[in-house]
Image: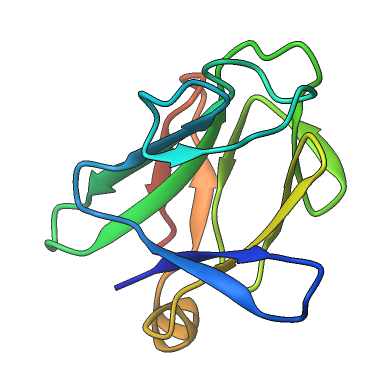
Length: 124
């Protein structure tokens, strides 16, 4: 199961498994991952899980129109297909997306954007 590793200053990280229904991140205690950070929005970002036709799952990081933006690999994003080892920044918080299974999937699956915004398709 993929997870977010919340990178903390003491060199230890807090592990947050990503359930199949996804998760939310922000300053509100109603989020799956609560951030005590004034630079994070109440509802800052979300990870969505989508199932492909073959039953495998892909994970997207989505910004929820936050004030200070969500960053993946140091780039501001609105929606980003997550890959193993992606670096995520939300306010002053840093996360690493880790998926032990994705390394083997990367060799067999490649995606391309379709002409429909927000839709990805498998390359043949």
